Amino acid sequence: SYFQTAIKIQPNFANAHYNLGNAFNKLNEFKKAIGCYEKAVKINPNYAAAYNNLGNVFRELGEPKKAISCYEKVTQIQPDSGTAYSNIGVAFKELREFQKAIDCYEKAVKIKPNYVVAYNNLGSAFQELNEFKKAIGCYQKAIQVDPNYVNAYNNLGIILGELDHVNEAKKCFEKSLSLDPNREKTYENYGDLLLKLNQHSKALEYLRKGTG
Image (cartoon, rainbow, N blue to C red; front, side, top):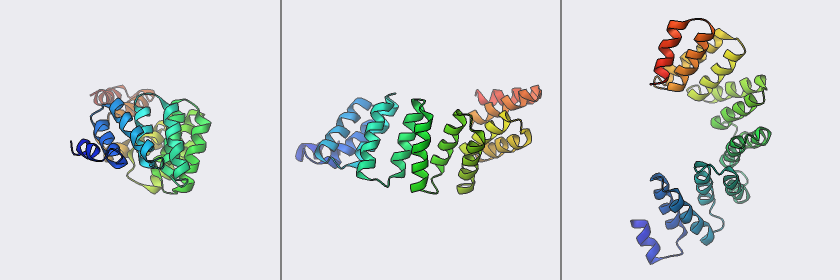
């Protein structure tokens, strides 16, 4: 490839190792990608993007602790990287360390006040701790920032359904499906809500759509 040729010509070209890592990553050749990113950061210890992508690969491989180490390197290089703090939060959530995840997401939205993904993830972490009011506030903030953000409507629908705010939950699922009519998870969640309401035939229709 072009990047392999560039590395042969100039072995200490960190950017070529990084781009080759990205290519391997897209092909799901994660071990090769790791090797490339590690070479890139060895050549350039301040290569934040390489550390970030290395962290993403470790998460993909189910190694969130290694991912956190990589993302923390990013925050040392770029202290104002809201994305890095959000990524650390995702990794802590995978470790079921929800309070640590919350702390990271809150740093992320403090740095990037319109960071819709971080607000949604923050809501999800609060939901895991049964802090439903805070979770609802986060999902609503995500929707305020981006009125077309499907995940937030779906998650808000789930939590409102659990709290028996049925009509509001229905509206959220319907809005989610209007934005993404092919989202199977939303059909499943809406079907579950309709089962609770003893609307069995309609529930079955949605659950079938949810399972493809």
